[in-house]
Image 1 (spheres, rainbow, N blue to C red):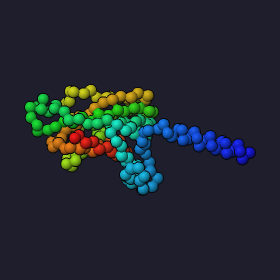
Image 2: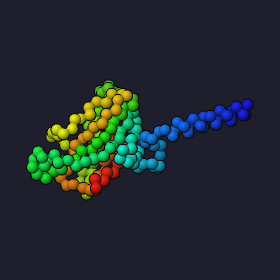
Image 3: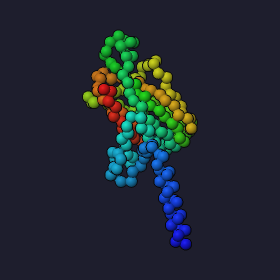
Amino acid sequence: MKKIACILLMVAMSLSIIGCSGNNVKETGIVENNSSETGTSMQETGKRMIEVEVGEPFLVNAKYGQYIVTINGMEKTDWWQRKHNNDVKHVLLIHYDVENVSFSSLLSSGVQLNPDSFKITGSNNYAMSAFTTYYDDVEPVGNVEPGEKKSGSMAYEIDKEADAYTVIFKNSTGDLARTYIDLQ
């Protein structure tokens, strides 16, 4: 009987190791205490903010399901110069992927990221604002249904350029993931 229990225990441990080894997606979520093993603790919301690299996917556990976001990078555009023939402002694009694992709500049948999903600050401490006028060089991603994966870009404007930027992904529960992007 002990041999059978040992064999079952070894099989269960082997399967859990195999199951964990293929998962390269970091997970945002609830922390049970105020210590932070992989991210910054956010005591007010009970959430933790994780650090992710450019191109590293992270799982968002939302009230109505899960989705995966990957911040793929950022690029400076010449849009303001082309449209207004001056350098008063600068327009940067943040590139991302969103994969809907199981998210669906009464208001939407899928994930809809908007410019408020990202907070962006330059290394010079200037915050970027969503480019709310019109930006005609990229199409918005729109709704991402369960099982779908889409790539997109969002435009942001700044008055002063920086060499590096901090991108924070957030949803209605707070800040979830932080990525540092160096444009050098």
